[in-house]
Length: 450
Figure 1 (cartoon, rainbow, N blue to C red):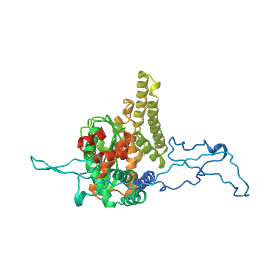
Figure 2 (cartoon, helix red, strand yellow):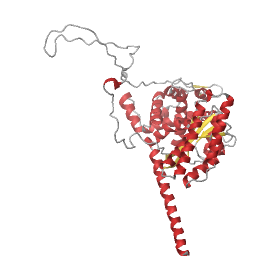
Figure 3 (spheres, one colour):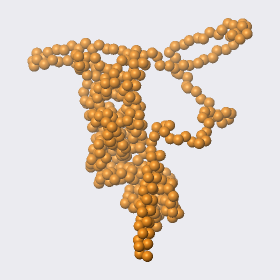
């Protein structure tokens, strides 16, 4: 009898281990299905709606491009004198107008700078000045023939913002602008832009250190076919990226500063708790997605009800935040206290299955980080700023595959930080790159991130 009981216990333990492994595999597959993917990577719907405009009243409002305010050229299309169908005489009935806006043919403009070089009569050194359009003072066989700043700015924007390869950019510049460039020439130009932008990148890190609210995040990256990590720290007006080998507190501390004392809206990544002086808000969107994912897997009825109750309280907290103006200060404090008390009572429920119990234990550990946004009006309830900042970088990674070298990864870190920040601040990216390349002094370049 004892042998049979021992065998039964062993069999139960074996089945439980198998069940846990199957649940883990199912969870991995579920996460893979929800990761960001290219537009046509996901399966299409079985019965999708017919594309295009609908007929009749369901068509919607009619619209067109606005009539241009400036007309550069006018052409008249003469009415034919004879009908092309019956060959009858035609008389003029009325006049109609059509507007067509196009890109004119572009030819590259080459500028020859004749640089007058003098010798100081006191110290004997060569002295020269610099034209405002020059990007460097190089001459001779090494730097005598260069790509202009506007071409470099456009190539950088296409590569880092839209993920185009250097080969395709070179082909585009040749076909559209009649500008012959090589892939290696574009890479060297990007390196020059990144070197010019290094002081600006350091200034952006100082600015993100001083921000009152920051959202950090991280995702996988590839460098030379090997693993790496892309880190981001984002605020409403500043974004700083970092491509690094690791995914620890050292990388987060490099971006934010190890003594960061502001407010952080973070996901569930543990190293963010290393900022002892920071106020941390756990992302409610991540908690809701985790709860929904647990509900997708068959659960006991009690666990399912518990997960639904947790999700309801989190959504109630978001609704309370959105309707804060409807409460008096005292009434808002009462509503907040009741919500948190009800949430705490849910965390005391012990009758849960393994995966749900693990989620409950995580909520208990991070309980002090869940409803901070209800007390801090300027603190978002999610890390959406970081998600928005990291999305274009992920699209770029999917199209380019990452970076070939760590030097290229550093250039990407500097340049993408500048491009994203300029976009948030409403600056023209092309013009900003031109100003950076032609800045005569570092002080003038730093004005681009003030």
